[in-house]
Image 1: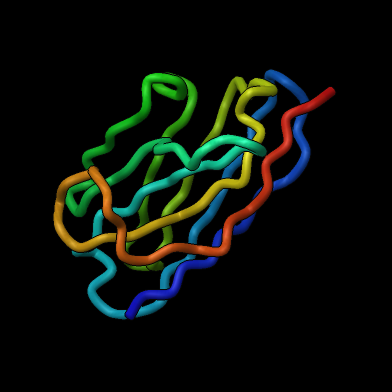
Image 2 (image 1 turned 90 degrees about the vertical axis):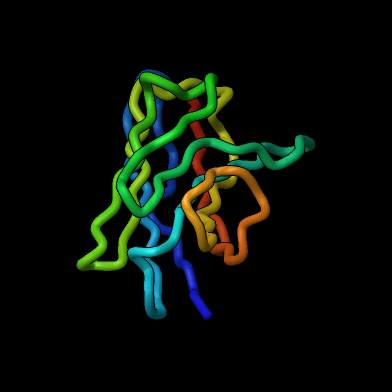
Length: 120
């Protein structure tokens, strides 16, 4: 069993940056692919990006070049660095984990989410 807790959300102006963190509990964290998803009001949840156990990353087109995912297996942490934020990035951001090295759903474990609001 893996528990995930996100933190770092908040209000930021357009063009600003924010770093989200995801703390994972449980064993074998380094063997999990970790993903970030987001859900804006009135919209379906969408994939943002993911990082596998080799630290290979994959990003949605909408965030590529602006967002960076990293992980620290020694600390059981995953990070989402978000730069050049846009109002359309406003959403609840979720951390998720799955066994295996592929990025596609389904994911087995989910955090509670953290709100990111991009507004002037």
